[in-house]
Image 1 (tube, rainbow, N blue to C red):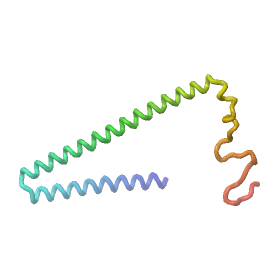
Image 2 (cartoon, rainbow, N blue to C red):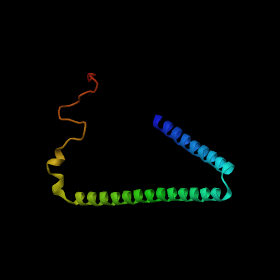
Image 3 (cartoon, one colour):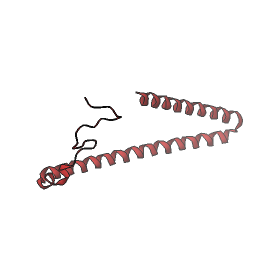
Image 4 (cartoon, rainbow, N blue to C red):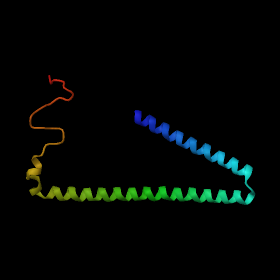
Length: 114
């Protein structure tokens, strides 16, 4: 819950700060710059926003493509391991899951089992 709260607070502050800075820059440019400079700044800021949007889109599509490939590989491996009985009888089968041991229950933080 804390992570969700602080993530949303950070996102809100980031959006608010971006909006505020953009507004201040536009005001300053409008006040001091001639018309040609204003149009150049506006064009460049639009181009920068478009490049940033395209970069985010490319990053998302790459991540989705990687996830799809990972899921397909996982499905292939699961299908391969399900049909290969020799892999289910080897020593890797005897490995205990993380946090478990053959010695029984061992409590954390010095508390005693009841």
